[in-house]
Amino acid sequence: MTEPSSLSASERAYRAVRDRIVEGSFPPGTMLGEATLAGDLGVSRTPVRTALARLQDEGWITIYPKRGALVQGLTERSVAELADARLVLETTGVKRASETQRARLADRLDAAIADQREACAAEDVRRFVALMLAFHRTFVEAGGNGVLLELYDRLSDRHSFVLFASGERLLSRCEEIIAEHEALVRHLRAGDAAGFAEALRDHISETGATPVAAFSVEGVTSRG
Image (tube, rainbow, N blue to C red; front, side, top):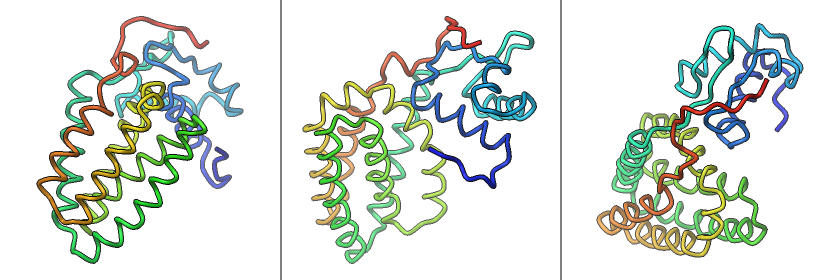
């Protein structure tokens, strides 16, 4: 994706490297070098260095002076904590939604599920992941609480990382995932918060099952 020209060089470098980590182009264990990244991204080493420092603060990499930056995955515990946080935020949104909000959002999600079917048929993992993220975000949006939605958005990169790491498994489970999404929409429309929570818990445990590729690793794959 082309970044807006108004972004600073460090912001563009940050987004580019973060996206490659999240989407699996730079898997856990990859050692990133400033010079190679600067050449790939068409910027100087200074904005790359700034971007890497920011990514280290966020836990995506560990910087080793004079060696490079080692890409980290997510620990098993952090994946489990992500699932717990999503369950709380999504179920809270649905509980707080009015009947009018539920009906409106359920109609939107019916259309979103049709888009998911198209992405699955085309075996388009990138689009399917984007659609899944938007689908689940809608449940938090339903509650009308901007703070909860902001908190949920902060989890987006971690959620994306786990989904991309599960890419092949996602495609193999397309029909089951979509059927689970349809069940969630039925609970949303009916205002069945308890049924929604139970279905969501099962759904997250299946689609968020921790792939080996998501774990932090000790091994190193050099990238310059």
